[in-house]
Image 1: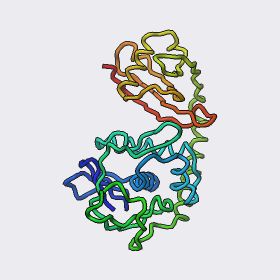
Image 2: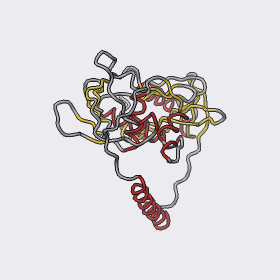
Image 3: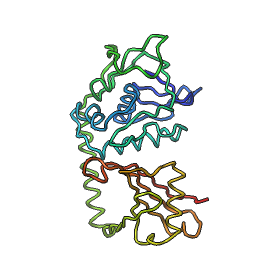
Image 4: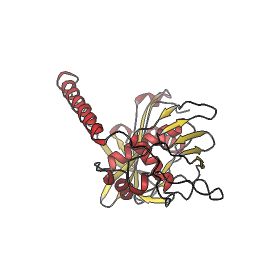
Length: 275
């Protein structure tokens, strides 16, 4: 099934391709999991709990679910769609919930499925198209799946390939750790209160007006607000103190149950311009 996103990008749910208007060739492809995650939110508009997303996209397919995996693919989707001018395709709602951004306009433009997306029960089966007088992007969650889709390659083969790559990565990481540079030292963070924000910073930022000014500039540029039950982790390179380009890291974290860092949206800039 093919969708138009904000009238600037075509998304094919069958193969995860993203195509620019006027082009016959896809500009990029989403991974299988990222594609299934995006398609799940398109078919299920409204506020959804993180637990339901993990169950439909990971658990129901025999995959190991975790908040870390979900955060990774949410960040990947946001970064990929942001490259095409679509900001915050999936937004975070307090108390551990997520939602497809209602400000993003998504239209169904092609209801002919070509492949089967295998990543969850009702969350990933490609639905039949709605009638012409129905809204194009809002009511796809209850449509029954078609039977005209060819299956993707066997999941068992994918598991073997993934296991082999993981083994190679582990060996390479072990060799680098043994022969490479010394292990990195952790950065100590101290909680402080600033402008109604719960903020954790390194020792260099304590009692410095420049550090808090840089934090406010980054937070406001990203349109992030301070809310109860949420906190920020902020770190920046020394070059920002001289108004030069510098590295900036900001984590926007929310509390879920007893875990104060249940999940975080992370932002890293290699060359942040404070101007």
